[in-house]
Every structure is written in C-alpha cells, then in structure tokens.
Length: 308
Image (cartoon, rainbow, N blue to C red; front, side, top):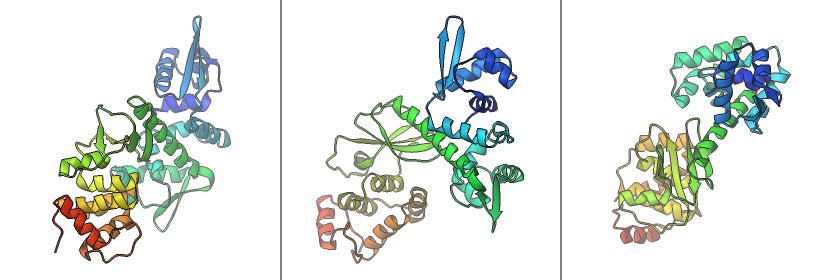
C-alpha cells in the first residue's frame, strides 16, 4: 500500500519543507525523494506547492496521516517505516480483534506463512502478543489497525470520488467496497448491485434514484449470494427482505457460499433467518418478514416457484 520511503516521508514531514530539506532528513537523493513525494501527492496524503524554483511539501489533513504521525511521535524508538512495508498493513487491517494466523490469512487472502512471518516480526518488537494462539495488539499499538483502516478508507474514497463525486461508502474491506451514488458509474472494476441487479435474474422492481455499486478488482459480476447480502446492507427492511426471499427461491444458490458471504459481510443472523423462513414456510417470528400467505401472493406476482 505504501512503500518504505513514503512511510519515512510521512513520519518525518512537519509542514512547509522543501524537497531538499526532506531529502536531508530521510537521507535519500532529491530525485528519489521527489518521485516518492509525487506518489504521495497522487494519493492525497501530502500537498506540494511550488514557489519559484522550490517545491514545499506539507502533510494532508487525512486522518490516516494524523494517526501515523502520532504513533511515530509516541514511539520514536520504533522504525514503523521498516515494519509496515509489504503485506504488513494488510495484516494490521484484519487484526481488529484477537485472531489466529489462519483467520487473518483467510480474511486477507494471503498465504499463512506470509501472515505468520509478519505477526512474528511484530511480536518480536512488542507490538503484538498472543493468547491461546490468537494474536492481538499490545497497549496502544491497536492504533496500527486504526491507521490501516483509515488508510484503506482514504484510498477507497479517492477511487469513488474519481467516478462519482457524490458517492457514499456503505461497506468496505481492504480491497473492495460497496457504494451508493445518485449517478451511473461506467468504470472498470465497478459492478452494479442492489435492486437494479435483480433484473439479471428476471426480477424487476421499482427503483429509487440511488444506484449501488461494488468495487472489486477481481470480480466479474455480482453473484446471487453477494447480491442478497448487498441488498440487506443497503436496507434491511421488510421490502428488501421480501425481495431477497424471492431471489433465494428463484435462483439455485449454493447455501454454503451464501453463508460464507454472510460471514464476510457480518450478516450471519439475517441470512440464517431468511433460509429458515423458506425452509419452514414462514414459521419464523419477525417484524421485518411477511406472513407466508402474503409472500405466496408476492411470489405468484413475480412467477417465482416456492419450495414445497
């Protein structure tokens, strides 16, 4: 996410310094440092303003920069720029609570050996500890997770603002997010979801003026399992729950995949309720679920066959 030189600059910069002054501070050539500053400007983590032949650099008002600089000031004896390179920030992102190496590896999509190596390095420096094979941050080093989270949010905001200035992030993970906009997005890696996506499964609903998109580099299309979860994240009210029930009855969804997606989005209880509702033909208590006879009528309107 950030190279070592970029982390060194963020740790060192105070405001209004020239490239020459920064190069002296971090002991790098001016040309090398200038390129790194350019990368940080592009990421909106620093600002650069030219005055004649000199370029002055100041830190941005990003929350991520503020957290990182606080950590550096409080723990000046620790070289964070060396510890947080490579996959380290990604591991810190997923250490929001005590987790095993396997858990972090599965959530981040990294090899177990990679995660184990990073956590051991952080443990040697006293930043993390273990309890019953679960790693956790020691003391105020949990701010490393906060830094990683804010940095990821900052990156996602940039991506969204580049295609929709009025967009709102509803949910996010390290390398993907769910966004709401009032304008159409036609850009690489943005995939439409929400009620508009139901049309791909022969379910046409009345749409609002909002549009919904999932950003993910490796995603081709939003699957039915993902769509069901996205819909509940957007609105977990009775209408959207009913639409999800129609989708679950219309499409042959792999239950294991659906439950995996539910765990990813923190919707295990909600998805379990919907599956139980279908399995028991409505024998589930809940204010946000239709009576079974009402759902039968809704299914008939959309020509959806219900399980017997």
